[in-house]
Image (cartoon, rainbow, N blue to C red; front, top):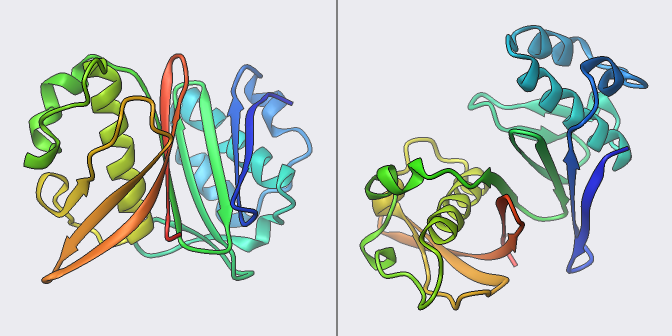
Length: 208
C-alpha cells in the first residue's frame, strides 16, 4: 500500500493521497469493480490513466467505501449514495480522495512551468500580486488548485476562472485561506486548506 499522506480535518473530512508506484496488475488486486466502473476503466487508453483510476478505487476501499456507493452525475462529478460527499483528483504518480460530511472539492497538481504562460487565463485581477518572497511557480499552482477545488465543490459548469472565482490574499506558507465564487449577483465564500509538497501542490475546498 502506497499511502503518502493521510489527514483528518475538523473531524468530518478525511483526505488520503496515494503514490502510484505499483504495476497496473498490482493496483487491480482485491478490487471488485462495478459494471459502471469497468466501463470507465476500459475507456482509458493510457496506462497512467488506468493506474490512477485503480489507485483511486484502492483509496475508496481503504476508506471503507463499497464500489456500489460511487456514481457519477451528468457533468461527470463523483458522488456517493450514502449521503457523504466525495471529491477526487490525480496528477502523474499521485491520486487523492477526500470524503466529508459537507460539500468538498479537491485538486492536486504537479509543478509545471507552462502554468506561467497560461496564468492570464485563470488569474483574477485581485490575484496578480503574489505574497512577498513566494516562488512564482508555487504561487500560480496554489491559485490554480484552489480554483479547481472550488469549481469541483460548486459544481456549476462554465464558471470563468478569471472572473467568477477569486482567492483572497494569503501569506506565504499559509495553510488556510478563503475562496469566493461570483454567480448571478451572488457571492459564496468557502474555506481553503493549502498543502504544499516537494513536487506538487494540493488544495481542499470546504464549506466550513
